Structure formats: structure tokens, C-alpha cells
Amino acid sequence: MSKKINLEINVPKNWKAVKLKKYLELLKDMEVYKDTPEAIDAALFHHLCGIDPKYLNKLDISIYTDIKTKLHGLMSIEDMDLTRRFHHNGVEYGFEPNLSEMAYGAYVDIQKYDEVKIDENWAEIMSILYRPVSNKIGELYEIKPYDGKINKELFLDVSMDVHFGAMFFFLNTSMDLLNDIQNSSKEKLLKLVPKLSTIFTKNGQHTQPFINYLKGISYPSTK
Image (cartoon, rainbow, N blue to C red):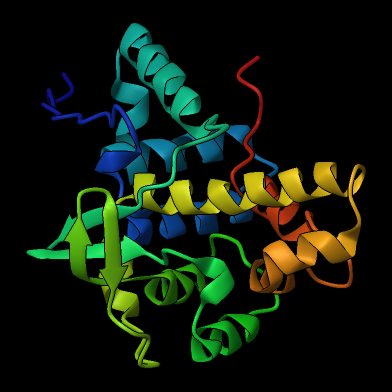
């Protein structure tokens, strides 16, 4: 008679429960097993719920199916609002209030990355865009000047709702730019958001970094 095993399963209800470090580990496994749906499902259970793959076949089929459906739903994210400010370890961090007036040093450091997407470089980019809040009045706030210091470890520990919010902010902004270009001159748009247009476009391909990003979170159909 096989020994009964009690498993404590914590299924994340939203991306607030998942840190960037864990998400990047998941993406690596999804890339390795991208042609094997069963292995990708095992990776989802392991990284998001903490279930060792060797225990999956011991789960009741109804429980397995229910969790799988919830995880696939979580991975089907299509949009998320930008988090302008958040607290972490007792410090409040704020998103760059005015990208068109971003410090030159920050602009140069972001330009070092070939693509802007959620990958091993993303925590560094977030460390440039989010800095400690130095002053605030209501919804208005200021953040500390950019000093060139990158705190990658801090943002690896930040939840994915913050990261997805920033990523979709740039995705939606780039799509808005593309739509507006059809009705306005490119020169006029570049005057409105000069650095944003430069940083998040490459060789005129406005959406390529974001297409790559979306491919990164794709997964096999549940059918």
C-alpha cells in the first residue's frame, strides 16, 4: 500500500503573490520545455505553487484540473495598470514622474540594453525607472535623482504586478504612438515624448521588444 502524502498547495490568485525572481525561473523552464505541454504544466505547478513534479500524478484529477485552469488563466494576462508608487522593506519607491525629462544618465543606462522586456536585465531597468520617493503632495511626488546605482536584487524581490504594470505601460504607450503617427507627423510626436520614443524603439520597429516579451509568456493551449 502506497504511503499517503499530505501536500499544502498555495495557488496564487494574482501576480502580487509572485516575485520577479520566481517568474524568471519559470520562464527559463518554459523555454527549455516549450515543445512539451506536460512539462510546461509541471513547471507552472512547481514554480507558482511549490509542488514537486514527482507528486503531480498523485493529485486527484479534479484538483489537478482546477489548479491547472487557474494557472493558465493567470498566465493569460493581457494588461495591468502601472503602479506609480509602492512600498518595499519600509521604503516607498516611485516611477519616473516625467519620462520626457528623464536624467541623461538614466537615459544612457537604459539605452545599453538591446531590448526592453522582462528577462534577466529587467530588474536593472526597473531600478533605473523606480527610485525612492523624496517628496509628495497627494498624488504628486518626486523621486531621488538618478545616481547610477543599480539595485537589481531589490527588484528581483518585487512582485510581478508592479513589473507587469510597467511593462504594459510601455507596450500600450508604444501602440498609442503607432496609432497617433497615422494622424500626426512623427516630428511632432517626438517633441512630446523624445526620450521615451528613443529608448523604447529600435530602427523604427516600435513594437518588437514587446512582441518578444509576449512570446516569453506564451504557453500551450489547454485544449
